[in-house]
Length: 329
Image (tube, rainbow, N blue to C red; front, side):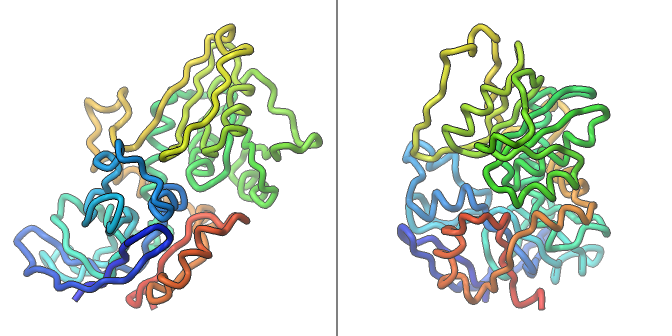
């Protein structure tokens, strides 16, 4: 028997049980140890804010049910293979599967984790894939000045990747001063939004990434752009609209506004990179213990129904909340 988390109505979740089918040849049964809650995407589902126009595009790879409700959602599950071909038994894996304590998938839908990536940290793989795709979309290169607006999980992973490109000058803008330590540990400069004493970001960045999903954040991102800079928008607003200042220097600077979304491999890589190759690369990039600081507070699977309100109301900003399943104990 498997147990999974379902969003059943606005601000309502429940745990449901069902029997797994008999394992097919070429499939794996995986016992989940951890899965990550996407604070951005899943909060929109929690509020019932997924617009009808996006019900099909928003489907998670192995989602059950249909929007708006009820849906079994999620896409960051890390666990151990307990049934399948002998060479897979005991392997640590990552899969884009909803929150469920045990599940079965075809082998080609499962990523075997490197030995130096622990299961809890591996829950960042889907977000790392998003960050990697955004860096590809941006075309950023060595020596460039980069600004990242929004120090959530995706923004910090973009920081982590771009700060490691030789010669880059990376600044991160966020409202939360507690992000400073992790930003600086990644080799970037932290600037607190709205703080006059914070380091000046200037208006000459070569590439700007926006991840804050807010109009003020987007305005800051536009202001930070230099002449003919690329502004990469990673935020998704659900059924909300947001103001975009296309006046001022937007046209005089000849800015490029680029949408980056993980559903498709970046255009410049698509001829050679499959989704599976990109996800495997994202998982391998998680081999740094520094990234453990991005893993948020852990909530037991059995306590989810009573904890979800608090998880989504957390403004202080813990990062990626992680569900711990009985197998992890």
